[in-house]
Length: 68
Image 1 (cartoon, rainbow, N blue to C red):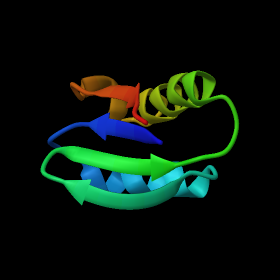
Image 2 (cartoon, one colour):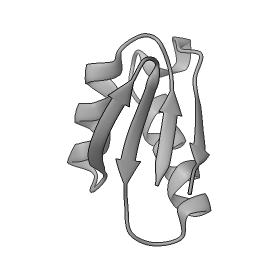
Image 3 (cartoon, helix red, strand yellow):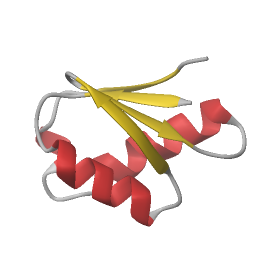
Image 4 (tube, one colour):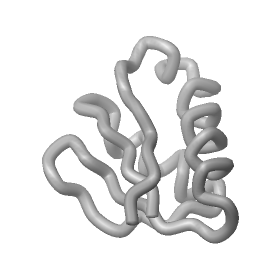
């Protein structure tokens, strides 16, 4: 499972990641939880790149981490 920690643009991030094969699980405060198949470390890097590729993504402060 991956968690994206961010305060802004949460709905936009959910939409971008779901469009790219990530399954949104739940939101807890600033944490967005996603399920995905494959190597989680690689998928975390991919999710970060997908968010930064958006026009609004480079201006956001966030991180993506693997959780068990």
